[in-house]
Length: 480
Image 1 (cartoon, rainbow, N blue to C red):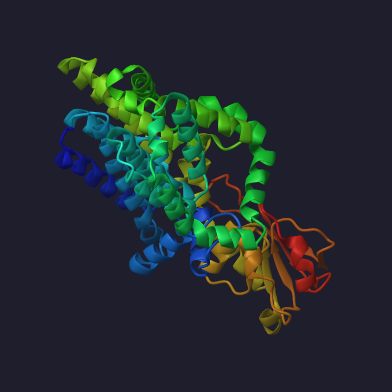
Image 2: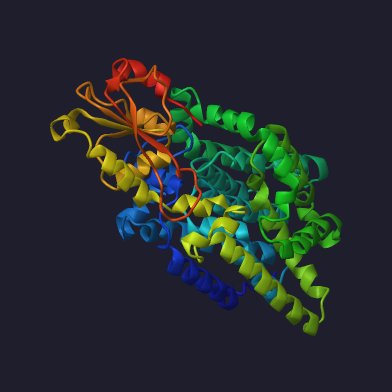
């Protein structure tokens, strides 16, 4: 077993953390981050569209470092940094030396998918860390044959289920591949049952919450497949070549071939077919193309060593320099808020999430101006109702009163009290069967030149609801 390259890998991580920290306060919160802030104030064992871990991390990070984009994103930065270390350790499991470990660390830190998820906190940020950790402990089990590693696998899977249920896809794809090509002996260990029990115990709070609420997470997943399934399937294959970086594609392809062909890595052979098995599962279910991106990093970790061996010293330096410059330029510009907000249009074609971090203070100002049109004596019974959780989270964060929404878990935090019988300020579309006496009061313009989901949203003032809020609330709940 090669020694772990602590020094150079640590340097890569230090640079990564520095860059992410320096830009973490630019632009503003992403809509999902605003939702996590709101959920973190209402900690629960589960939420409609996610387990509890990400909102908990949002709460801890903002409590410690401040309820600002920079404070919240400390959690994302740390997750990304740990992911880099874990992938370097995976390379070491494959017999990779100092150079291969550093290449994996640098490739991971600069991968577009990691840059995006390391910049802003999301369920994918935590999921990326979980998949990397699971890959490492699974490889330890395969390499050593020591059944006690099932406990570590169970712990990672259990914690992962409190972040995102996608970890089950990784478990399924690797499990099916092990049954097909081995090493099947790992299933004969008595520690397997202990690992399963540990995973269930750690995941139990979230699973029980979902069961008690009729598994709304499955409803959300079904809606994603139904609404976006065709687009996801069309984009799936081309996006696999973009999520890390086009310059990294030869490395992860080499990794897959090495795992399948190299007799010295026969113990890890099942990871080669596990990736196409995962892709098939995602294509069948209509899952989002990025769900498989963490697995590409495992293949990259396997491909680092043979890629370095195939180059002489001069070629290695030239290739490393060119790849680093091109890969870093694309990943950082696409993934981080480096450009002026007004220059984002080309970036949004590739990464629309950049635009979702701009314009929230301006939306709050637009809504405030309409709110002030309500007579002061009627504001105590008035309600602000939004179409989505990003709008609600932003207005709540910027201090507007009486904010409610029927979107995702915001529906569980309503309805407004019975005393809220006054005017309703509606952000977004509405049905006349819900509200009465409505007039359009404003059309939001962020003034930044950014075309995002909130640009041009209509803001209306209504005299009230057609029925009491508690009667109407079931109709206002929606998951998409």
